[in-house]
Length: 497
Image 1: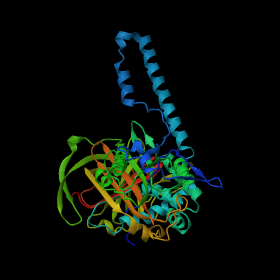
Image 2: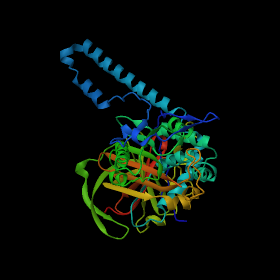
Image 3: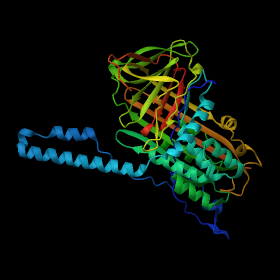
Image 4: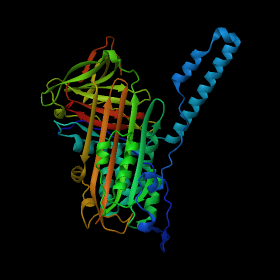
């Protein structure tokens, strides 16, 4: 089977609780009744439609290292004298160290014990299956996909379905129970979330409910408490509501996906929309110098020669060599990284029978790390000559055919789909949209993704380092990994147009 790139991307949701009048049933459950149309008119902003906005964990501000060094350099030894200079120097060091300790302690507290090692195998299997389905066989167009973003959107979908509908989603996720789903989604969110001076991986989730219908309170509360999702309720098929949805997505993706986001439309039969977003920004550990950037030729799959700016740098590092390909990575300042797969000259990207997943390993933190490629590639250490095109690639995908091919079918079938945890109404999923974008330049990488699910009612270093040429002047694959190797984005670049 032809395989190309395989990754798991992170995606988590941000929710809050749900404050609303509730009609309680005899068994202690509750139903959120449909409000009077006149009591809740359409609003112009998503905040006005919120039952509750997500309350994200608070992290102390990461100390600014460059500002700290500016403070040290500003100390005037001649003016202060030796004793006063030493006192001020030590005071600044102590304050900076205390801020660093507080930030890292809070970040570690948020992460807890990390992602359970028992979840890494299901995550890897899910990544293999979805990447092969979404990226496999594409030879002409660029494809960008966030496995983690889709994973967490599907976790939310599992919470709102039951019976065979839920079983099919669980099978794709590689999980057995909804309790495992909650644990996986929560752990991924806490381990991926970063908002610091050196890098950002920001996650947000929301559920949008049609104000004309009743909903079961327990399901909405679970989404809020376990998935950190904001909850909104509004009239559907309304331009103001659509505008609020667009604004929420754009705010949480730094407006990188405006065209795709603004294309989402509800109708009067829309029962709900589940939305998950992921925003990433990383600064290269060693930035490319702009004076080394020059226009060169990228040869697309079609053979067309395209003029594009290429960035250049030489740096020692690890690489992997396999039959017909080379893999190497560029690290970001915060410990995340971007991996590139370059086929050999004359080898097309879709012909490479290999995959680059995050292999599940039983580390102390139970996280992902790159595999040793025992069967597919050999690891080496060498002087890597990087030639990287500045690129901006995106995808706007309809995932219904791919999900059906992966065994998730009942949620799309009228009279079969089961949304009973959320509502007593018959409903089917009418759209699964996944948009993603990745931008690379001299400073680093910026990327974003969203998934919107709409339901309608119905090793050793050699003595002499080898030279490794990573000249990405022809179709290549890429993978962006988060902290501890958790995959964020993967894609194929076949053209620069």
